[in-house]
Image (tube, rainbow, N blue to C red; front, side, top):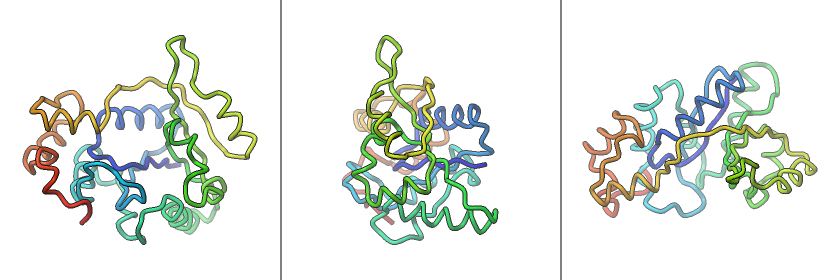
Length: 208
């Protein structure tokens, strides 16, 4: 059984990779497939074009672990549209209508009901929620999790630790001439350098 990890991945970093690896190990998934957003409905600061983000994912993960499905769908790239397409494809492939496993951070999980067509997401997804913890080790947002449980959302909370890094941090480091070793893979670092990404962000188109 597969699991999906959606995001802009602008760029992919070692935190993403570590989360996917631990989710796969704990849950026993055959693979975690990364799905980069083509044209998100909300404004994303400094979003470079889709082809660069897709290429970096393939370099970091291998082509079989990356899907370009959102490139083929209508824009803007609402998650529910992508999920409906994946659900249809998976049902045709297996002959079964099974929920899609979907990795999501706790902060985005709590915003689900502001997403487009949340009822479709509730029907077709099992959420693998990655929480944050207080300093005493308690998980943040216990009351919110109870709310979503009572609303009928299917989710599992994975209490895992992972590298504290973000794509925003990487972009900031690059713009300030700092080394990003230890934040993403060598292949992605070389790709960013060879294509002069993020240091001249204003010259990049947001799609294409």
